[in-house]
Image (cartoon, rainbow, N blue to C red; front, side, top):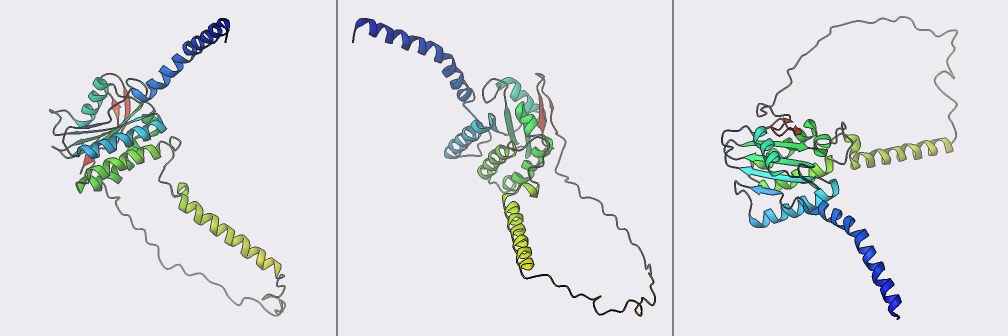
Length: 264
């Protein structure tokens, strides 16, 4: 190979390197900003469980461009859980691809047995107050039973799944369940096959009027009797474990959604 060709090849490699380097750096930043997802200050998890949750949060977060975080503490130094989570977001600046970015947080205070969930940026929109309440209700039984790893895993999976639905849609609506759609499809298929089989056998032309003489047959009498009407009212039960929450604004000015909060 001539020296001239070698120089051209080297020049081409240098140009390619400098053109592609900014894109590579940007792509790397997207996956490297949030390196820690579990802050287990209450020591509820083993090292192995923490590692599994970190890997799960990283995997699921990449799919939704959101940092799924878990915070456990033994006391909040007098702060309410909403303020504590807000201050954490302000001070630690978590996020999937940038500081103060897309973040969902599950917060546990073992001292007061409080549980609270919050969503920031994209998570505020796709994990609104109602969806966070649904997640909280589903993981609370495991929290109460001391199955913290199971509860935290469910939180990550549910948050990931719920963010796959358009905002404002109830992700627990039976119409979105695959098994319900399968049952409907099977039932519809059965109805179509039955109708086809019925029509293929010919139509029945004889009915009750075939042998009735309309000139001699008539209704002798008709009457309606109203007996009574009863209306029963029942108070909708309330969850006494819920205690406020519902999102807000951090002291740093970041808005967020939030679950109703509660005990476990």
